[in-house]
Image (cartoon, rainbow, N blue to C red):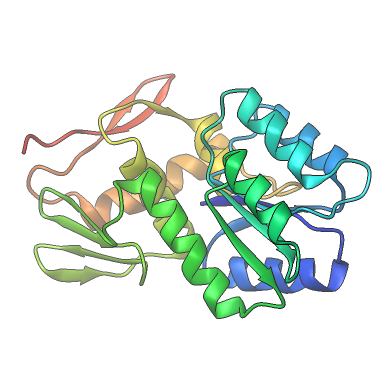
Length: 224
């Protein structure tokens, strides 16, 4: 899961980065609205935007308006001052999915993030089933045939991306974009290694990560 944080308070941004990275997410930060808009307009594929409304250079509501104007359905969690009810209403009307008033608990923010990202991983349920594979999104625990599978943070991230797109091709570039933060160098060879390790741990029975040579990978769809 890759998250963009648009927040001008550096202390809060650092806390959010530490918390989300500790939970296994790849998180990037921008300090103003113009940089947020530029990052969201590029080919970088974020899974969630945490958006402070009181940003310098471009207001958070304008960042949100432009994001939705480009047709993006990316989940957006807005951060607002406790007394800015009108701004929260405007944000929700423009297409934000949830909001939190400052100050807030980082534990609650983690729970809100998990709830918002479930939508891209199969809906409101915290558990995804794919044949004999069960994945608990809240605890980030994978099980095959009822037995827990030990996966590294990078392998869990890879599994999440493939589950989100089960039955569809995922290119190596897309995997890098979803798994890696800015400035993190990950080669195509490294992606191949991660896929190889994940295969060895989860490919039981009908589960299969197919390689489409020269294009990418596909977690094969299992008939219901």
